[in-house]
Image 1 (spheres, rainbow, N blue to C red):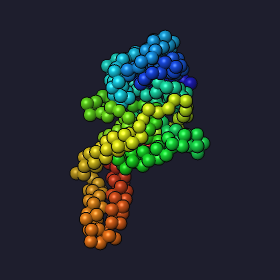
Image 2 (cartoon, rainbow, N blue to C red; image 1 turned 90 degrees about the horizontal axis):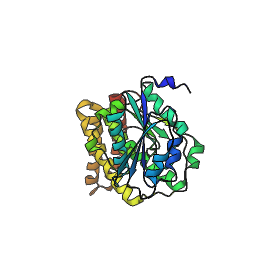
Image 3 (tube, one colour; image 1 turned 45 degrees about the vertical axis):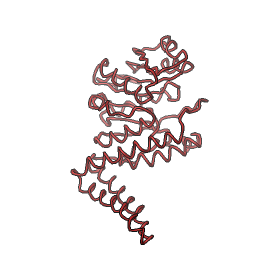
Image 4 (cartoon, rainbow, N blue to C red; image 1 turned 135 degrees about the vertical axis):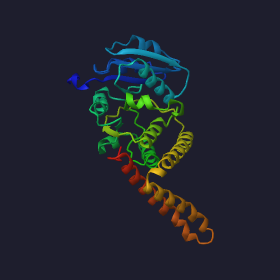
Length: 302
């Protein structure tokens, strides 16, 4: 690999970690030499995560931040903000999990589109081939399909594997990000994709390998879908309303959206009107995506 392709950019990696004493050393020691900064955010670990991170040998400058259970989203935000204060600009800030489930060999592919000026934010896609999809545990695969559909609706862009946390973001985007309004918990990747779409940033995905360990997720599905679903509903409406005055197409989308709601009222006397709800909302969604394509220019698939 020719590290000269990094150009003027430096590369930082944010690593959120909670009780990852078995993995954190390997995560740090396998970082590619192109990484200049590594920020480990130890979010309230009760094991030896902090000590093991201190012992790791890597060419990157390592900083370990300790927090008290602020949540994965807030932990990543703190890592990004630390790089804003300390890293040489311009830089790319990537996110890699502390559990070793992100292949370090994919890091170059994740950061390169930003360095080449092709994207403002890059996300990994663990489902780019049929083999990748079949490798994913069935329960996770089903959840990913539902969340892909919901994130597509909320962002106005076709989105695949939205829960993949292997991402990279330009320092220019991070400098303009509203950290006070940023989502702090699970659902963090979905929030970012919706907000990035709303702001018109260039977002692309790249294929990455998935590494599935023996750990089980601590996410409670019902609570997750309720909280994240509500968040995406709110962010979807904020995004759409923010563009109403800029796009006649978005205005038509809004009218069909209202028509879908109105059909429910008419269905009290004429049940067939209930068909207007899915029909009206389907047209509204298609117009929404068309409007976003016109507004942001270029692709609407991520």
